[in-house]
Length: 146
Image (cartoon, rainbow, N blue to C red; front, side, top):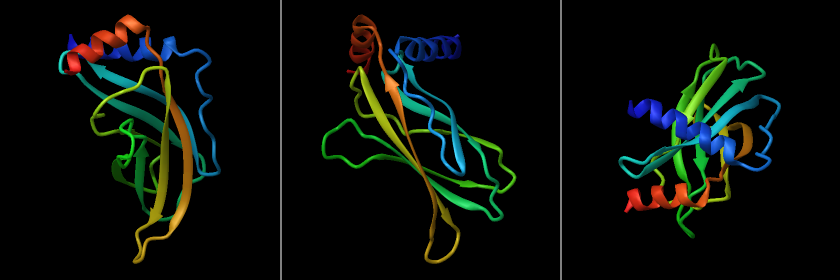
C-alpha cells in the first residue's frame, strides 16, 4: 500500500509543476523522466531520474550523479554506479535529502568517467527536476519530516 501511495505522490509532484523543465538531451545521454519520491510516513525525500543511452560506449564507465543540495553551502548529494556497455537505460536515486524547497528546480549533473587511472571524463549531462507541490501538501510533508 505504501508503494502505491508513493507512486501516486510522485505523479502528483510531476503533475503540479507549471511548465516542467524539458528533459535534457546530450550527445551520449537523454533524460527520460525525473521526479521526487516523498515518503510522508517517514518524512524522507529522494530524487529519481531515468536516462537512456543514446550512443553506446565500448568500455564500462563509472558514473557520478550529483544532486543539488538545498542546504546552502553544503556539498551536492552524490550517487555513484557503473555503466556497462550493454546498458541501454539506467535509473538512479539520490541519497535522502536533508530538507526540501518547494517550487524549486533542482540541478542534477551526471558524469561518466573512464575506469582508468587516473579517470578521464567522457561526458557530462546536466538536467533539472522540479519540485512543485500545492502549499498544503508541502506543509504536510514538512510536518512529517520533523
